[in-house]
Length: 400
Ligand SMILES: Cc1ncc(COP(=O)(O)O)c(C=O)c1O
Image (cartoon, rainbow, N blue to C red):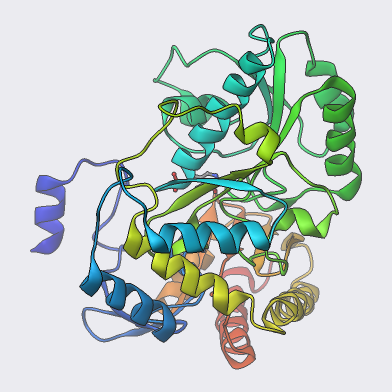
């Protein structure tokens, strides 16, 4: 019934299939339940959104209290939750100023606009081009789509906004070769998420910083997927000791509430003047109150060390699994709790079998299984997921 209505009323961009798409109705911690009451371990985590799992009490409480006070007032007025969240983000990062939007694409759109405007205020209107990485993902608005270095997402939407060119990820020389007199900025994900869980190397990201400094360019890190504790550090750039001029957040920031943020240095922030950019819902009080509760939890002593340790543990166990099935696993990649398992193929089969056995994982193409469990996942839950994965491997790859 519901599936029929979905087909009737919702535009078919997600290709949901009644035979394999779940109707999830309830969640708590790492667990989700479908409409029939079947339980699942959630290692999709809302695609890196549910950093503290489902129905996390402090987040619920903060949002509920704010909802009862006031849900929305607009950016015409001061908002206490918005200012407190900005303070917390700035005091715990290299960012000095924040702009709030509602999504990752919006945060990146703001970064792109700011990079262009900053160059104009510096008298360099000729500098507008941004070099991004092949296999990157920056969003689906027209500018962020143009920034996304994957033709498959761009096809059919041409002409794309001009001002973007692409270089190979983790290849400094490739980025250097794209530099020209129009270049304003370099924008990369420190860890590519949608592109297949590719972790940036320190040599590459530090090299980009150097390249930007040498050429007076801005370095933008898209931490929409890799920020907010996902890699075992609050922000992914901390793994590298490389400080971006601008970085963007969304996904996990609101613990499930839609919110995005762009942070930048004071100097770069001066590129925007009143009226240059805005968002009706950006910095909504409820989303900000929830985000502040998420941040406070992630900042608890030992929380991030635990994320790092659990990620290492999971990857070590994946290696043991890989050893049992020679030739099946091509690579195990990741940082903290963003983990990709590259297989020779049949990733979708593994995904479907895992789902049938009560474990939700996500696939990138038919080769990569991605794990994005809540950051507060327990070791017992990691072990349960590994058990399901091994059973699925046995069914799919036995005898290969
Ligand atoms: C690195 C990165 N940037 C931007 C986005 C776009 O975020 P949103 O879907 O919230 O617009 C995503 C989404 O997957 C992402 O992974």
